[in-house]
Length: 409
Image (cartoon, rainbow, N blue to C red; front, side):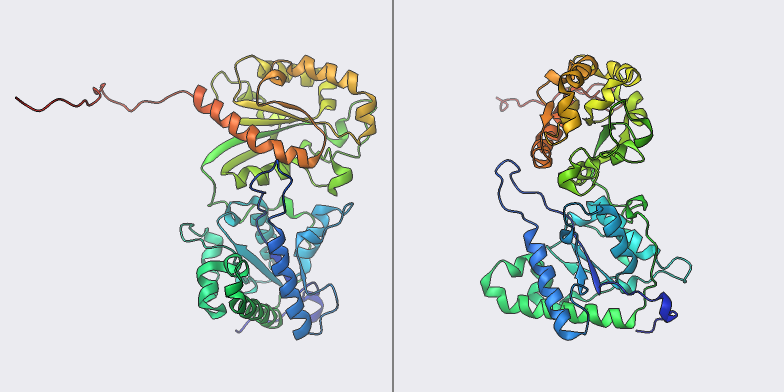
């Protein structure tokens, strides 16, 4: 592999690899069962172990995945830093992967590091198969990534890591495939020079998978203030530069916007969410005919402002159940609890009709509870959308329905 090398001071000094994967929600978000992403973490730890044995890399620098985040970490800053310095990008291919906006942004942020240093270096991307993708077309960004998966074994190439790690009879194939992938990561890290980048916030990158999207559009509206427009008596702790950055469960969450969790889960369920503020979506939400199903994430503090209540009133008209409301109510947020009665009064004044609809969830105490309620809310909003959306019959004259007739006498 012949790749021009950069000056030593511009070479990456981060972990050998960054593991990029699509988060899988539990099959039943209400049962409090196990975490399905633990299997990805198991693969990650095995790869790190191999790299530690095969190189002189310091402890903790073999690889990185987002499960290393601790409560209180700045989630976006930490991932951006790792994407700025990692030597190899390892995407775990699965049917969910190319529908994940976050995975697309991670991919784009990694390759953006080569800006100003010539052509991007797709050779520094080493994909791995997590689950088979026989019916999934690769987006344009992944079409030029060359990697012979058969080198890791025929059973791995057919079933992916998930398929061979779950069954004891494939134990030898799993051990062989993980060792070979670790060796491939080391080979690429030592032969391909990725420059150190400066990814301030990877979330601001456009996804590399813009040509690969789900087919069911929906609106995801964040009704919350930003740091510059906070209501009287409200601290800025849960807010950011834009409404999108609102994080009502920050004490448990490590500062990750609620809209990002909602987007990820919506895409995993086959929806294509368009995320925006109330200002962005107000006209579409108030339209007489539904344009798409929608979910509004409402901060009760936002409704203390008259201008916000005025914008919400046209949306609150009865019979518009294709727009569902979810209201986080963090019981550990002392400011919110101290003014609960007043906030509920403003919330009811703004959205009294919508709060009584079957899809509404008006008191969500934790992030886990939010994840549990969101799939049902999405499905209810989608059902109402199909019930109320205008029909567009084909052009031309009316055709009688076919009917069966008896045999000729």
